[in-house]
Image (cartoon, rainbow, N blue to C red; front, top):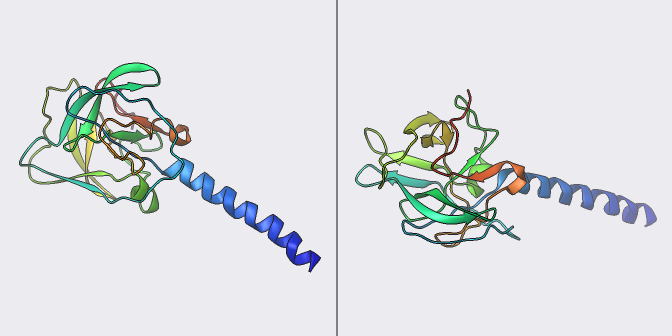
Length: 178
């Protein structure tokens, strides 16, 4: 009996640590608005699962909004519904790192149309589509764009800094290196 308890007291914490590490490194949420709004980044207690956001070519795929991120008011990118867009630092210009389970928590912004994605406002960077493991993913300055399942409303930036690898996309984000 003692050995069973000892084994459980070792195995269960290891499983929980593994789940926590996976959630912190591979989960996010996004929300934003096309009008000016303010939001303070918070750490979510749970990260609901979501599906990829699909954007058609019939209207703007990306919009901008004003939000408070890490105590600063900045112009951020949002999807057409106003949800904040994020990038994942392990992604590179040539390889997407957030797929599968990660993409369930951090739904990629997928383009389903012809031509190039458009923005509701003029952006200082490049808005493109790259085919990758997630599909025809929308890219800004060579950063794959994602929303975060933990953002429940436009203007939220709950995914900012998650796992030290997820960040809100601002209009002035530096181009990703290959």
